[in-house]
Length: 157
Image (cartoon, rainbow, N blue to C red; front, top):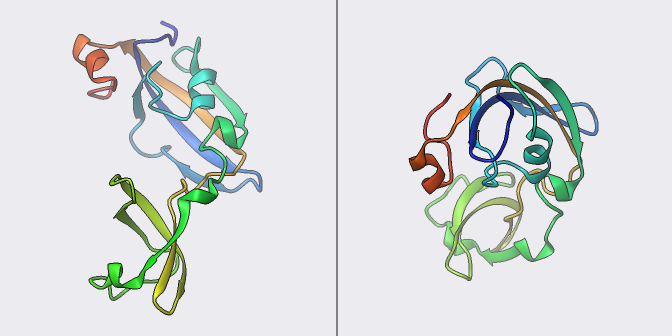
């Protein structure tokens, strides 16, 4: 079976930056399941998965737009330090959940603390980076009706 829309795919990966550093991965752990064609993984990787088969091993290099996007300066903003009153361990690099001005919950990273102002960044940590995925396809199966309706894989393959 080849990977097409409505296929549940399990794969192992290593995520590598331009300096050759492994940033993340699943090798040595559980394979990652996703429902193909539903934008559940980065766009460039999903495109590279199409037509692949079990046991295929490949590398794909992605531009920021194909991966986690470019850095959006509007997602870097200042908030009052008082919003972190219940976090005595506030420090640069801390990641936490916040509600943005639109009322949406988002994960932000603290990038600067100055007096009563905290600068946070809601961009994905790998936004703006060209990345390489080293991938091995572990299994492929047809999605169930429930998975298609939900738009995501329910169980590993």
